[in-house]
Each structure stands twice: as structure tokens, then as C-alpha cells.
Length: 396
Image 1 (cartoon, rainbow, N blue to C red):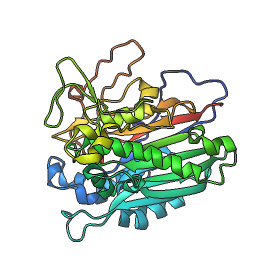
Image 2 (cartoon, rainbow, N blue to C red; image 1 turned 30 degrees about the vertical axis):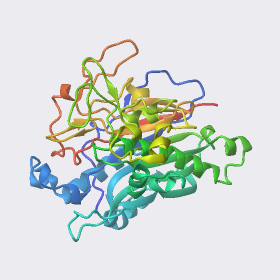
Image 3 (tube, rainbow, N blue to C red; image 1 turned 60 degrees about the vertical axis):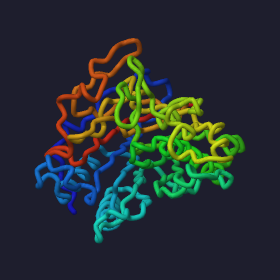
């Protein structure tokens, strides 16, 4: 696969963003991109609205690569990357452009065609800016503590969704940071599993950091939250719902913030009062396991996180994933709040008015987005949009 020059430079130009100004002494920017690229085996009849020549993987993979190279990212987090594409095309090509790549794959699904390959996540980093000190690929279910038993935790363990973690040294600032890529469970019937997985991502990051002898400072070994963190991916969770649907009931004039989003965006996380808490869902089971779930709190502890979209635009975008049957925000870049500032973002390909504090934005809901067709399309090669930000490490 060649890397032809992109003709989309103007479309991919970053624009200034950031609710707050850059603090004095902020480091030069690191460009971070996350994108679910829609692997070939999932691009089936449900995308029949897309002309076949634009749905074809040969076309789409070329557009994906052109877009990524045009953005010149320092860190890339990709989801739905098929193993043959990674091993034979993506990794060799990006090595030529100065990147190293990590990969974690999920097992083939029972309904996959016989010749369908595994797919998974990939984390790439630009070696001219970042030096790898350590890395780990982890199945999230393996992070469930041994004492956690019952139907719910059995379901979490059975999932093979994972996280890639890379401890990186910034050659410019000489600071160490942790980058992560993940892809949470897709099924909207099980927001409790997604909330648990969101907490397990943070638990995996904490355990990984505390295992690293390269983190010499004793304070950092005790306090994983002292390391700058960026975790990106497809979290398969809306930030909120304003209307009831087949999966959730939302009271009139109220907003339901999803469990996974609350786990990551708030310091407190969720307890049994949240509708997405495991104790409120169908996998509770009975006996002592149910009692233990009732007292369970899921959180991002010890990390205090902020969405890069919120830092850039004051809110999450209405849409990062759009088909002819769904539209919503599922993709995020999560930052340790005290370590990062955002100066620029890749514009979204639809009308989207950033929301400044105290101001009402014109486009608030996925249904308000009328100038973006179902995806993929001729110009956008996945059903997801890439999110890209210029991030700056700030003085501590």
C-alpha cells in the first residue's frame, strides 16, 4: 500500500481551541489522534447506503492512511485494526515514517465469516518525539480481582476487550507520560459492563505504572496519578441521553449521563444510585455476589480526568459516529487534568459551535446535526470520525 500525497490538507488543518488559555511555560504541542477505522469484516450490508467503490477496503484504508499521515501525529490510537492489515501494511508503512507500533487483538467472533481475521487496537508513537520505556497489552477482564465473583463479573471476565499502554519519554521536555488505547464493549444493552471496563482501564494503568522501575521517584511509585496520562479510544458510550430509547428511560426534562462517561469524567464515579451501575442491571445474579455489587463504586481513581473535547470546545461533540440508524458521540481522548492543556483541534466536518462557559451552543444534540451524511462516505472512510488535538504538558 502506497502513501500517496493527500489532497485534503485544508480539511485537515488544525484550528485554535481551548476553553482556557495556555499557561506560561507550556511545552511544545503533542498531536494525539484517536480513530475507529471500521475494519473490513464489519463493513457489511448495514452500510449499503455507501456506494460500493467507497465502502471497499482498498479505497478506505488508503484514505485512512492519508488522513493519519497528513495530521502528523505524535500518538495515534486506532480501533478495529485487522491483524493482517497491521502486520503487512500499517506497521511497515508507519515505520518508514518514523513510528513504532503496538497491537492487541480480540478473538474472532462466532458470527465472523470463516476467513475473517482478528481485529483489535493499535497504538503508534513518533520516535523522533517519544521514546518508549515500557509497554503492555492487557485484556481488561483479567484485571477483575479474584474475590469478585458472580454472574456480572463472569461476564466482564469473558470479554476480550483490551487496553494498550505505553510509558513514553518526551524527548523535548524529558518528562515521562503514559499513553493508552482502548475499545470498550459495543452492546448498548450492557452499560454496566462498559462502566466496569472504564474503571478497569484506569486500574490497569495504575498497576502498570506501579510496576515500572523506570519511574524512579518514590512519590511517583506511590502515586500513579503524578504521571501525565492520555487514554484514547472508542468507549462505545454516549456522554448523555435526553430522550428515552429501547435501552434507557429518561425522565422528561432530565438528562441521563452514562455510567462509563461518569466513571471517567467525575472524581466520584458511580455507585448503586446510577442506572448503569451493575447492581441495577440484568447481570446482578443473587446471593453474596449481589450484596457485594450493591456496595461497589466504579471510578477512575487515582486519576482525575478531563475529556480533551471538553478542554477544547467546552463540551463533547454531538456526533463522532454516524450511520443511517445511529448518531452519537462514542469516541474520546481522556487527559489527566492537572498535566495537560489543549491549544488546537481538528475541526469536525459539520456545524459545531463550541460552548463557552455560560453560553448555549447552537448544536446540542445528535439530531441537530443535519449537514453530515451517514458514514462511511466518499470523503470519510469510516463510520467514525477521527478526533485530533494539540496537547501541551504544563509545568507541575
